[in-house]
Image 1 (cartoon, one colour):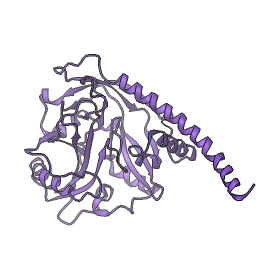
Image 2 (image 1 turned 60 degrees about the horizontal axis):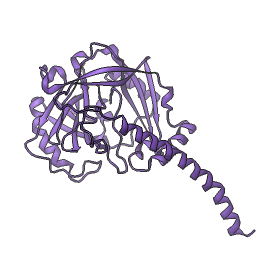
Image 3 (image 1 turned 90 degrees about the horizontal axis):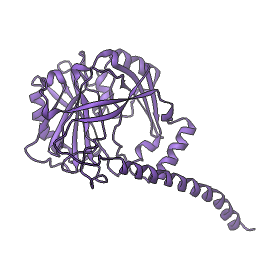
Image 4 (image 1 turned 30 degrees about the horizontal axis):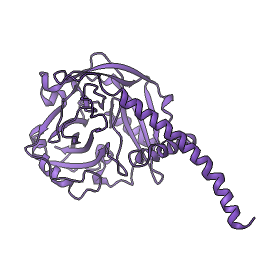
Amino acid sequence: MGLCGNITRYLLYVTIPLAAVLVFFHLECSIEKEWTFVNKFNDEYNPAVTECSSALYFINGDLLTIKFGPEWFLVQWIPCSVSKLVGFISMRLGIASDYRDLNMKMENITIMDARKQKLGPFEETGFSIISLKEESGTKNWRPGSEDIHLFREQIAPHLMKLYPQTKRIQWFSNLIRGGDQFGDQPRAMGPHLDYHQDDEERKRFYEEHSFPEFLPMNQSEVHAMVGRLDTEDEKLGVILGLWKPLSPSEICDYPLAVMDAQTFRREEQIRYHLHMNTIFNTFNNLNAAIRHHPDQRWYYYSRQTTSEVLVFHQYSKGKWLANPHTSFLNKNCPKGTEKNERISAELRVGLYF
């Protein structure tokens, strides 16, 4: 047998098992998708009912460690079967976690409609909704966007009203959740904080794990939290999260829920070690997982539109004010819209006082 014959034979040895594995994962993806659509909404839709009940996963224990492989940055972009294959390989190589091993407990949570509740002021609850007079001129909400500045300039006066003492507004990361391009991320499911509130704990974390020096300093929340962007007259006060729907025009299926900061206690914050392997670098961050307590109060804004921006606290310097958050499945949505899932933009901004 000649060289071409040997190459063909070896290619068959590789491609046939690979094809079989991809077919297996494809069938698994199809079953999961069908099951999701079948059970996604209630049999009857009642637009007058906006208080929701949802099962959320909370963490037991004092430490959660999760490792993401490169599939995390591909999952919205590549076929589901390929994503599952990459994830399977990542778990076997030890660069991604097996979620079946996590110490989680499901709790049924009532999520109240903030539009119908008498809430406390922003400085106490930690969150609010901003209604824009007109749609943003920003068209590209992904990292490196050439027109993201249009939204930033539009929302800045509203942030100044929330924190009039602000001397400088420092913009950090922005991304899309639910999109279908490279780098887009899936919906965040499960109560969490993107940043642990304890600065001493963060110092210990980065003594053990590499600091993200590869990130541009003026765009990195981690650099900001350790004081690298402070000046003599401007110190980091808070990092706010901004959440804005992009489509459809009104969100129903997976809105964002936030916990009232007044009902979040220090002992309910759990260390969450996050390690994201991008092949070229590993991004290490000290997040916070959440321990459930029945006194916690959760809210969302029903039918949030694309001209409304949810603002909440990701991190506060020197004070206890933060809003754990998560998306959740709202089953009280109209039939026929189950495949039109929401796409949203997520931004983070630091205010310096």
